[in-house]
Image (cartoon, rainbow, N blue to C red; front, side, top):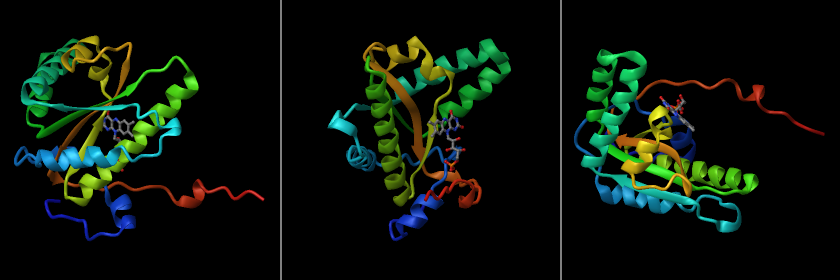
Length: 189
Ligand SMILES: Cc1cc2nc3c(=O)[nH]c(=O)nc-3n(C[C@H](O)[C@H](O)[C@H](O)COP(=O)(O)O)c2cc1C
């Protein structure tokens, strides 16, 4: 999955995009391409145009600190060996990005803003996929931690983390199936 796929149809892009678990540790995709993906992500549908998203480009120092924080959490739950394995895996991830969404006291606004952020993620992932760049969306325990918010300099009263994203060139593209569409398609009179 290192070749560019922009000649693919929208159908092929949507159905062929996969969450990537194994990345090549180098090269890291050019930052300009990630910035363009973020630029396009913002064209997601967004009720009242609240533009609730914040995209944090995570540099190596912060990525290292997040990987260490995650390893600490894994260590508490699963022991030192598991923590070490996670630390090694996370340390090899090529590109890091965090997306947050503005918080709202209005539950409808909060849900709609989160939904808009998810639409933005899909835009971002599909655009990157068209360039041959894979993404993994992470919502593991670490993103709930107040220390995580400290590491990305975010006020947890103002923003909520939608995900931690890794991006890069795939070592392997997994196979994933979906159930038959008629299981989910309900035609009403
Ligand atoms: C909101 C959200 C959170 C996710 N969090 C995780 C995660 O924490 N860990 C993980 O391995 N995959 C995570 N994923 C990726 C899904 O597991 C993945 O999309 C699913 O297995 C389908 O695979 P595909 O994206 O290749 O079609 C998340 C996806 C979404 C939409």
